[in-house]
Image 1 (tube, helix red, strand yellow):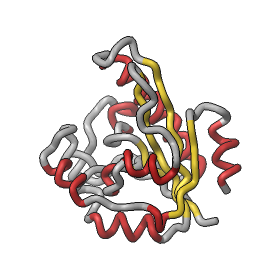
Image 2 (cartoon, rainbow, N blue to C red; image 1 turned 135 degrees about the horizontal axis):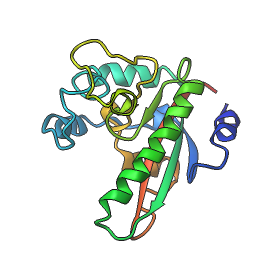
Image 3 (cartoon, rainbow, N blue to C red; image 1 turned 180 degrees about the horizontal axis):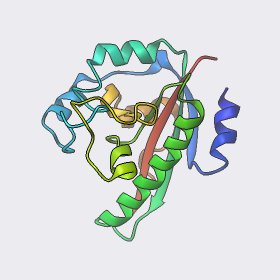
Length: 178
């Protein structure tokens, strides 16, 4: 299965790896950060807490699969304050994650970087939450909303979280059975 994902990425990812789900640690502390609304999406999006559901449900969903295919994208920034560069890099990463979700998401759950932006991209509106999702087939949750610390995920897979000064790296993952 890994080869299928690698082929679908067609060299557009920076790094990738496969991690057995038994090696994944879940962090309730991440969800506490969500509750403090650090990113501004708490209780405003179906793919973030509390809309995504309890951590126990996410853990069960992930552990129902034997493996996680993790891939990253990396972008160079003008400097560490290059917010526009960070936004463009995240948009690129989420487009790539969206493509993987379109191709594999029906059978292999896909998780991306940050809150879902499908509504903003497709209809220039905010998420319909708490009303029913307008694009249930297009949405994917974030790695962090599933209670997974991306730094620990990178260490478990032997890939880099920090790729040097003036760079930003985004992570996504696809669940599958080997």
